[in-house]
Image (cartoon, rainbow, N blue to C red; front, top):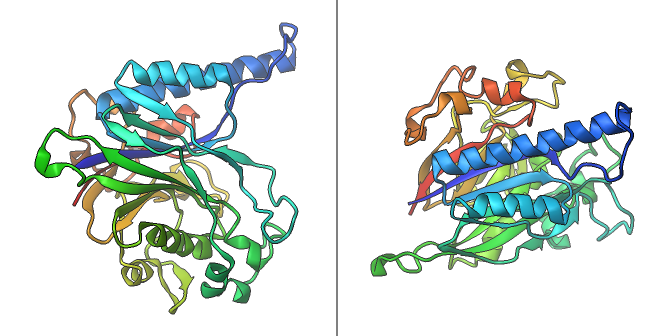
Length: 329
C-alpha cells in the first residue's frame, strides 16, 4: 500500500521584497503575506506529521525563492521527507499561437519520504494529434476567456514524476515503481483537458507501469466529457480509458463557476485518477482540531460534508481542502 495527499495551496509565493515603511499598505501586505506562508508551512508539517503519507503533491505554487525553498525543505526534512519543486511552467502554451495565453505561472511540487526515489519532473503537453482525437475543434471556446478550441488542451500542462519506492521486502521490490502526474485543471475547460490528461499519462506508461494522476479536477462523475469514442459521462469515459477514480465523499472546493464561497457552493474537486488495477479509498484530511495523532483518516468520513473540512475553509489558507488516499495494487 502507498499513501498520498494532494493539496491546492491557492497561490503560494514569496512575499514582496524591499524595506517598506512601517504602517504603509505595502508593509502590511508584506507582513500578511509572510504570516500566511508561515501558517501554510505549519499546515504542511501538520499533514505530514499526523497522516504519515508517503507522498504529498501540491498545486498553485506560483513562485519560489531560495529562502522559501530552504524553509520548506528544512521543515519536511526534519520529518523524514524530501521536497522537490519540479519544473516551473506558464499555464498557457505557445505551441500553436506563439503568444502566451495566461500570465499565471506554477510549480507542482512533490514532498516524499526519503526511502522514495523521484525523477526531476517532466512537463507534459499533448501532441497535436491528441487535440484532434479529442474533438477539440468541435467545441465552443470558454465564455470566460479568449482561448480558441485548439488551445484548450494546452492551457495547463501536467507535471510527470517517475516514482520508485525502496522497500525492504524482496517480494515487493519494484512493485511500487509507477508514474505520478500532478494536474490542475481550470473550471470551464476540464471536459476536454481531463480525458486528454488520462490518455497522455497512459501513453507514457506504455502498458508497463502503473500510473496515478493527483490534483484538482473539478469534474463530477455525471458530467459530460469528449473523448475519441464520443461524448459520455466522466465515469463512463474513465471506464473506456481503463482508469478508476478515487475521490472523497466530502466536498473539497467551493465552486468558481457559481461564484459562491464557503461550503454552500462547494464540490468534490480534488481526487485521484488511477490505472484500472489500482484500488483504494480517499478522504479529506480533517483540520488540526479534528485530527489526533494516529487517527484513521479513512474512518473519519463525514457524508454531510459540512464539518470535516469546514475549518480548512475558515482558515483562509486555501479554497481547497487537502485530500488523503490509501492506494494498493
